[in-house]
Amino acid sequence: VQDKLKSLKQNTNNTVNALLDNLALNLAAKVDAKIAQGESIGLLEGIPFGIKDVYMVQGTLTTASSELLKNYKSAYTATAIQKLLDAGAIPLVKENCDSFGHGSSSENTIFGAVKNAINPDLVGGGSSGGSAVNVAKDYTVFSIGGDTGGSVRQPAGYNNVYGLKPTYGRISRYGLMAYASSTDCVGPIAKSIEDIRIVLNVMSGKDQKDQTTYASAEIAQDAISDAKDIKTVGYFKNFIENDAIDAQIKSDFLSAIEKIKAQGIQVKALDFFESNTLVSTYYTLAMAETASNLSRLDGTNYGNRIEAENLKETYAVTRSENFSEETKRRIVGGNQVLSQGFSDEIYLKGLNLRDQISENFENDFKEVDIIISPVTPNIPPKIGDSLKDPLAMYLSDAYTVGFSLGQLPTLTVPQGTATGLQITAAKNNDELVLKFANFLK
Ligand code: GLN
Image (cartoon, rainbow, N blue to C red; front, side, top):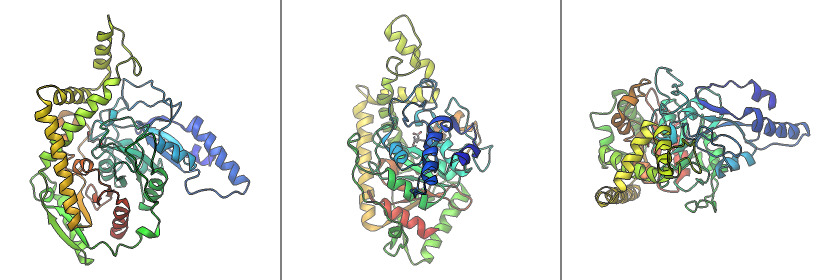
């Protein structure tokens, strides 16, 4: 295992810092010793994986790809990562991403834009871009991304691999740097449904350190091998019938529907909220939550402090100089949304719309077993383009953010030439999502 690890290729563009030298080699040595003694090893023992650089791994840098935390060393290890370490998996690299998860292209980073695995002129997607590209290029067997509004599913789609956002609360967020706590999810990215299943099982479970977690049953391999109980699949009409969707994405989606129908499954067109409503609801809440979550990063307890005349100035200069343009846009927007005189009109309205969106899903899942959708309306943009037009970038999240607001399990599966297909089921029904993905294979 140690020799294998040393021979693995790595790409600095996707990688923030390599754990190979210390942690990984020590862990690999333990697996090698077990093998030498003829002991059997577990499914994940010796398997190298990558970690989006927003997870704490004790003693290693956790930068969130930001200037502010570029020297920050984690004081403890995230629950989800600890569970993987306990299962013998080997953390190989911390991965490049949009700073604090703010972005859809992995260009909002101090480590340089992540290049798409299929076409290096295009973005790798985001915010877990380094993680998806590492998997696509076989630099890691699987990677752990973070998905707040699509950050696992969209880069998975852009790079033709699988990426799961589990039901909110299935995996502990303890040790995942908070972006928008009410939708933050830990999510695996891998090249097969089977790998997703194994890694999901290991990371899931109730954690006293994250009170939003719940206990879930293991998903057995044969439980997802037969999809006879899936009778009806729905899709949102307005996701497909609009001017913004790319022609290839639309035609690939329509062929997926035909394929499903041909298997005797009923397909129903459903009504849903306008994409603009979904995007503005998500960004209202996500910006409000991130403004609150990032208020602790002021150079006193955390972050590169820039000293100024007095404490207040020190906070201001530290934050102005060390946060990226995109992160500052979100902090300013979020504080505006939360401020007196605006919060009733904007923030509470966002919460109310979120309830309506969840109710809509609940009603849909009385009629259908699964909902499918394209991952994005657009193909991956060229490197450089998203930075010029933040609004266009936000709108590219139109198909992912609704499922985040609903806290539903959603998997991206690779699909034809387009940017992937999303499979969603009702809350806590992650098993059904994997089952349907197997059926489509
Ligand atoms: N692109 C979305 C955003 O910027 C989602 C990011 C994420 O899931 N971390 O908010």
